Length: 74
Image (cartoon, rainbow, N blue to C red; front, side, top):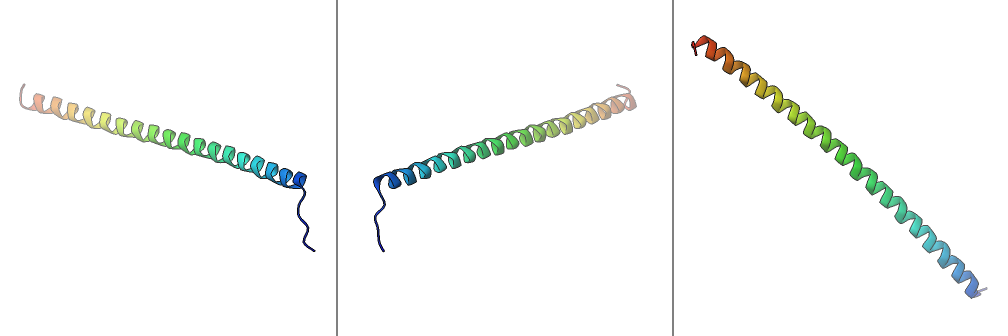
């Protein structure tokens, strides 16, 4: 028994399909945005960590420089 779908049924199916497709696209966009924000946060903390490490090294070098100056009478 092979019956053709009515125009109304085809239209309803198309409408549901495109509504679901639009919803899926919105969800993917939200997920992409969430991932991008997470990457930005991780990069921010990575950069802050690197800056803190550089600051510690600079302070260490300044301390060594002061100690050497005192030891060498300068």
